[in-house]
Length: 366
Ligand code: FNR
Image 1: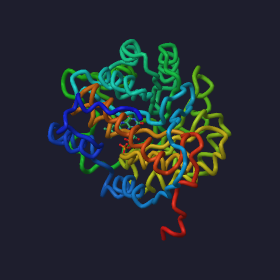
Image 2: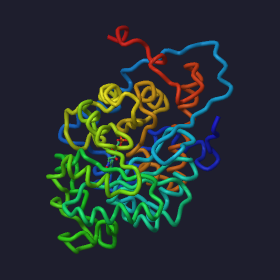
Image 3: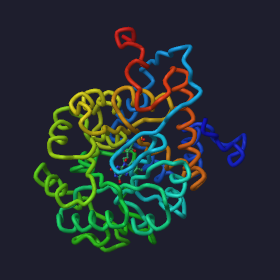
Image 4: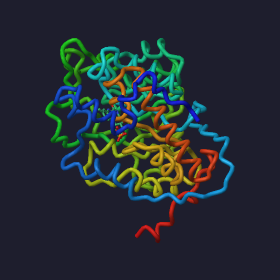
């Protein structure tokens, strides 16, 4: 078992991702907490992301030798020690003074690959220089293709093992809980990866909504894939037909996500969309999933339904807010340890061989 680190967090410190969320809420100013935890509109999808995991029952298999567990997994450009990665989230310096540098440190210590957001408050160059851990870089389609191609070439040269293109945000979602737009940063913070984008308001590198390219389509994605020196992963896919077309276009992985319930309310829970995407992809490229992963059993269920790895968004930021690098590391360690326990209790020993056999049959659930 991968050891937790109780000595650093004390018997009274958070022990679960839920406890990290409550501890973060106590520390963060209201608007920052709303930016972190809020979802779109009435938050049906946000709640479903976690709730639908709980609806799935596991089918423990007994009398299996589970002394040795292999949690390794593979995603484009990286062989992972375990299948828990950090999803891209913006503005880490709102949560901790060291921001993305603390996140990268905690991720590397926990053996978790970190997907750096283009809305980071630290440049990719600084993050890459500060960590040995594997990094991907995430990009929202921008209305300036040449600038975009320069960014992907730059981050690839700096060591990004893949570029993630987020395609579920042609326009921002209706985030009623957010009391600020999540994009105007306080004085002193900037988005260095985007600050140079033509047409941006110069103030503190802040970025306006029109910086999202609502016209970005299949041909633009094909052009970006051709220009990108590293594999391109597409994030924000829920439909099987879109997934199949992406594989034909040459993406290196398809990432099932509803943006943590932050964009289109009443879109399906990520775990409900996963089987549709996995079946359309049919093993041709890896499938990833994020949205609502809070327990090791959630990770196991996602693996069973076709994901090769999962990503966490809010929980890592809660860890960052509560304990900096150590908090991020502990959040990943908790999830990894819970996954190992769930695997052992279900009688499976290898992450790559988890199948629907670990799930209680759906007929019985209804
Ligand atoms: C996000 N997410 C996100 N996604 C993305 O592609 N680029 C980004 O810059 C951001 N920024 C961001 C900020 C914050 C505060 C949150 C909570 C989320 C979405 C993120 O990558 C991921 O899809 C979800 O967070 C996954 O759901 P959970 O794990 O938060 O339930």
